[in-house]
Image (tube, rainbow, N blue to C red; front, side, top):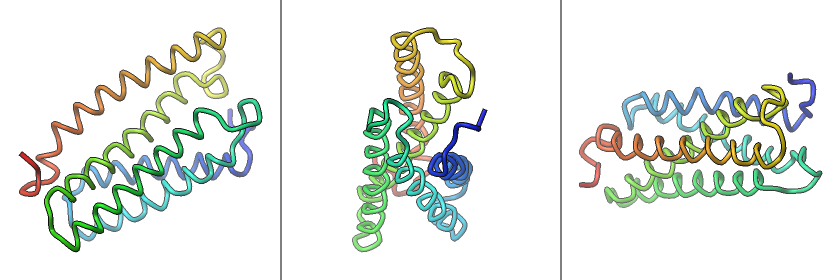
Length: 169
């Protein structure tokens, strides 16, 4: 199952698993605590390894593809989340903290979507149950659209609980 992984692939895979666990901890922990900050810092570090190692993986056609674009989107979301946290620390503007929550939540959602879609569709992990490139692409799109829709609803619903008094109306 994992024999195909190169060194960047192993870094990517292991950092992704670490980020999944750390991101879940960040989500479940009370916000603003030392433990939240420590888990969040470790999550950001793991996600940086995930995103940067993705740029070194060229399993499909030996050239950059859609997954490299998604790694850039993830890196952007992560960066914006941290920049908004930094701005919130200086200004205490609730909108900055809300933006931090939003970007970090979508960063985790993207990671979760990548994990689930790889585990359900990638023939290296689950065999070739999706016949043909078109069916593979359609299955990947359908799975990710469903995950994105459900995740977006959850992010909106949980924002007030997660942010407490800083949640926007």
